[in-house]
Image 1: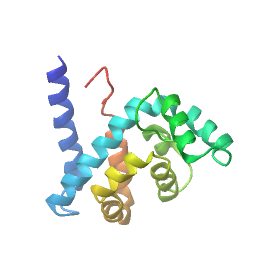
Image 2 (image 1 turned 90 degrees about the horizontal axis):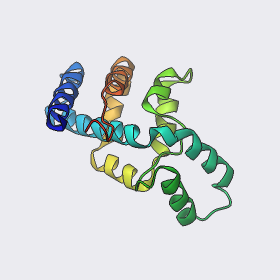
Image 3 (image 1 turned 45 degrees about the vertical axis):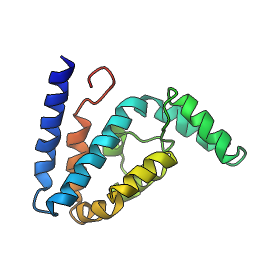
Image 4 (image 1 turned 30 degrees about the horizontal axis):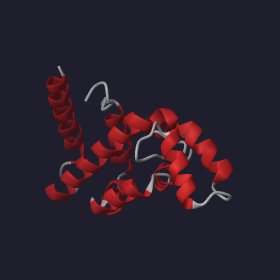
Length: 155
């Protein structure tokens, strides 16, 4: 069953990414696919803690050291080694009445440093620049990836 879920998810990911084929070279498209898959997986694992992390961060980011803040946010996020304190998830991003660029920037800045470093290694911000010029594609990718279940029970 698990193997089947993985195959279905992988197939769906490449199907989703085919929507932006031609906007960028294949090497960039692969980076986008990996980065969005990574973000969606994290979203499926810690998204349920988004509001609690955002609330804790807002109340404590000025008084706690970065180390203590990081430790507590990891605890709040189910003990995972990553978190997001922006208050956004893939679903909430899509429902926001603010500009896509503003919401996306807030979402990305809210990640723990290890996630930000991974995304930097995938040239995610540069690749997003290509997609943002065609904002329809960026929103479409978030919508389509939001439909993919990469939770611990599925994959």
